[in-house]
Length: 171
Image 1 (cartoon, rainbow, N blue to C red):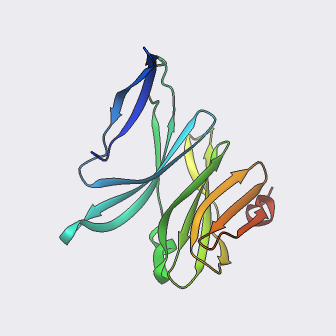
Image 2: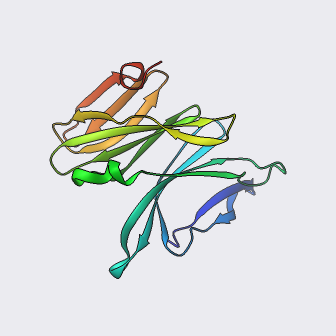
């Protein structure tokens, strides 16, 4: 693929079309996407230096429909703070969202993980990061999901763990 994000339109004659291409900038790679309601969230890495190694990561929120109703709305971006990436933590390609909040999983090779909730502050139109929720995992993570007030983790060995979001991030 070309690394771009496309909106689908259709169906027309039972076929969908790729429209409204959202190409990442030349030094940005989209790692993961998720949605909740009319919000579309992206996890991206910004490449730089020799061999195009990752130098930073960001979370981007798009209102899925612009005022004309034919494409993505205005974006809101927040960088993942570098101090969250110390100790071997890197963003995994696992994000999930509920409402105006996206949850980003950072993990290490030593079975440590932290989850950061980024919530849209509608007054300032900014994404605001929570304190990281730290946890030890017994296997590498395969997938994550949120539902209402629960966070779910599927591990590589097929086990599912869950915890209430309120206990991790407050009400």
